[in-house]
Amino acid sequence: MKRVTGVKLRGSNLLLCLTMLIMVVTSMGCATKGYYAVQSHPRMDFAADAQPAATAPTVEVIYEFKSNGVYSSIITQKYRWHVMDAVKKTGLFSKVNEEGVASDIKMVISMNNVLDGIGGAIMAGCMEGCTFGIVGSKVTDNYEIDSTYTPKGKDALPMKYNYGITATSGWLGTTVEGGTNLATSDDAFYDILNQLILKWTADLKEKGVL
Image (cartoon, rainbow, N blue to C red; front, side, top):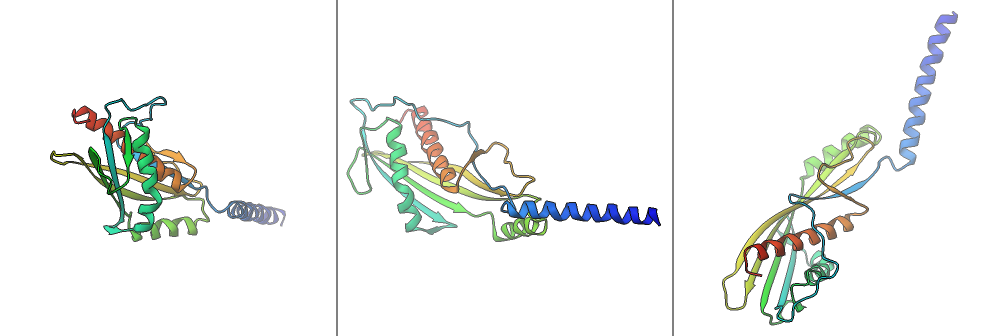
């Protein structure tokens, strides 16, 4: 009888421990969330003392955001000022103008958010929910960017770039190899915009057109 009682007691303790673990996880929001900005090139930074040369050209910056090919005026308006500020921080232009202002150069950025897919998001959510947030999930938004650089009176130079933001949650599997961990989705988006402008202008300089 004592042996049987001992087995039941150990089983009860195990069940109690599992229950407490689930309660702890759920009380902490069920998951640790993170946002990772991902790019294929080494990270780049703005020069702290970047100043335009006396002969630096003016530039008209046009930015548009699409989600699966559908234009979004709300997101475009939200982030276009950051794009213009990032271009200014390169120190390569004497003045950064809004769309419609005549300038020496026109820079057009068309960003298309290609979603990871509803199936992937649902499966990730189901896995996390069924395991009380212990098993992690990852959902990635991919961004395909068509950028066009057009000096006044010359042919346009189109270039393509790809970036991503991976949102993670759960206690396991919450890191992204090669990604930069940031506090919010906005921070991650600002980061990929900065990396885009830095990479694009670096490529233009390498080609000798800027």
